[in-house]
Amino acid sequence: MVGTRSLAVAIALAAGCMIQAEPQPVYVVSTVAPPVTPAAPQQAPAPASAAPPRIMMWWGKVNQHFDPAVGTWQTDPDGRSGANLDPLQYCRVWFPDTIAIRPFGEETISTWRQVGNAGAFTATKPSKECVQPAAMQP
Image 1 (tube, rainbow, N blue to C red):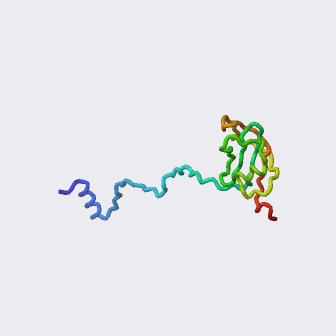
Image 2 (image 1 turned 120 degrees about the horizontal axis):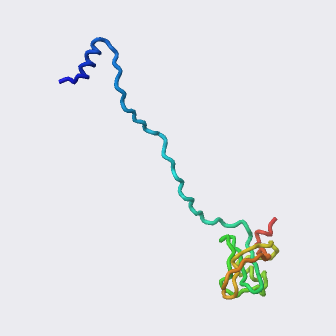
């Protein structure tokens, strides 16, 4: 059986009439990707520092050394090496190829410790560069 609407459409078409179709639902598919939240940046390994190897001494505190391979100031793990040591000899403890020392500049660090590596202190002191053979070449 043909519905009333279908019959009316068939008669109108037979008579040559134009029939306006019922609006059809329109589905829109977005081609835009949803926003992407960037991942948290990965911590890259610390690059070797371009700064030269150096030491710092402060009477009453444990000596410090800056190792460019690590990129940070470090307290002498023996917990007793102090400012009474010869700076050139102390450089050679950490950097055996050291051929000389020279002033580098005032630096503020917070890795100072008392004897036994106790406590934590921040101070600005002069640092000394542990001059390596390559540093002497023009």
